[in-house]
Length: 307
Image (cartoon, rainbow, N blue to C red; front, top):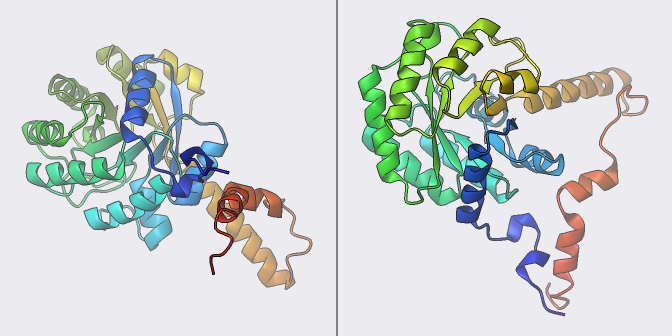
């Protein structure tokens, strides 16, 4: 019996990054709203794919929190991002939006960031206009670079990509620093500079969301829904009506997993057993299915004499 590439588990299969990017471009141009959960590790990305989503977000905040137990205040390097992203992209063939923060420096650093992430298989790369070190978009005390400097970074990003289907998302954090009007003007300028999608971070009301959607009509728009954050949590249909295409839930999965884990450990510590835990846990069979154990076992049968 032959062993074809389609018989291999995702962790052993070569991905066609070009085809994945082309597919994502088609999704983006359809104007159909995309709910995009965030993944902070490979298992999270696999879970997102198994749950039926069309794309996912490699969250910088999630990586800082889950892989390094650090706050989202710009402490990770490009090397850290690439190391973690390579593991995550190995676990899925979904289109992946990579949170590249500020690009880790000026235009030359942005070019290297885009080159490295594209080589790993990124579908889209998000760059923001904060001053380094950046802070979470829903934190206080942020600062932004001037608009022209960000435009230079976007120019560098476009020059660095080898696949024109690699999507460049320009994020502005100006709403919290210089106000909504400046954030909108930056969004327009970044779109004119060639950004494929615009992300005005942390609008604080439905009216602000509406103003962004109206001013940037015709441009694919990103909104980030943060539980407990500054932006209203509206239904996807309402956000689509306001003009938003990519609807991020960047750390919903991580926070749900951490909370469930915390409750499980509290029970184990107090009860001295996992018996009687009040919440369901993933069944044994589902756990093995999630990591493709049966597919790995089938591949191993082709090498019966291996020790």
